[in-house]
Image (cartoon, rainbow, N blue to C red; front, side, top):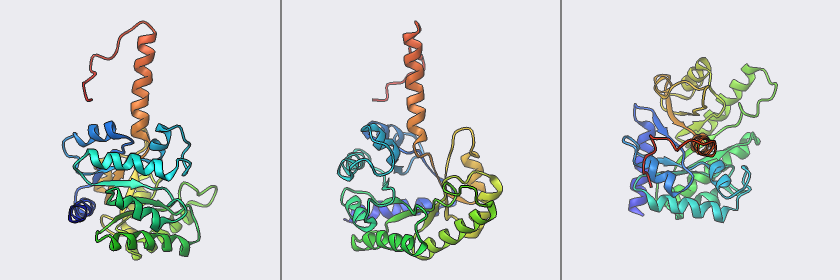
Amino acid sequence: MSDLATRARTLLDLHTAPEVLVLANVWDVVSARTVAAVPGVGALATASHSIAATFGYEDGENIPLELHLDMVRRIVEAVDVPVTMDFEAGYGDAGATARRAIEVGVVGGNLEDQMKPLDEAVAAVEAVLAAGRDAGIDFVLNARTDAVVRAGDKPRTQVLDEVVERGRAFLAAGAPVVFVPGLVARDEIKAVAEAFGPQRLTVISVPGVSLSTAELGDLGVARVSTGPFTQRVALTALQDAAAAVVGGGTLPASTRALN
């Protein structure tokens, strides 16, 4: 367990360091090993959407937890860096799911609030953190609020107020960082980062939309992840290569032997 505690502390230190933590999400052993081999990568994050897609399931806790955890275990065992797992909304019992994730070697996790009543969402955050304490580690919870992605037609000021209210509640409950998917505008990111405090905000990098990771770091963002988009990058390259070959061409000359 001491090794697990060390990995958890390493992951937490990466979140609180002055430099922004960039996590290119992975979904299987070969993607994990490929990303872990990149210079400067100190931790890995799994993408629930991508793992589900690997086995033919739709996102949203449709993949059985046993199958999901088995893939995460394989990833953890294949690399030497800390791994944080996206366990969505906790599969009905956030504390129990966190305990099972810790058992396979995970030292951090994402937990969606799905805009449930705030007291319920805070209780789920507390349950995950308690699971970490029971295991003797500083579990790095990336507490996610869906206030932006589920905003609908609410006025933007109301949406941002909800982001700040819910994020501060999760931080007060002990979560080290708060994840706000859908937050991409510079002024909004700056405002939320200031409301949360230094090194407390996590965002996702969206192709063709998001600011650069360097710019996000300058705005006070603690962590930038890629969610399902790294798998989509890989699949885009695969489909383009297949189209080139089927169309009479060749595979890209830049292809490297990464496995």
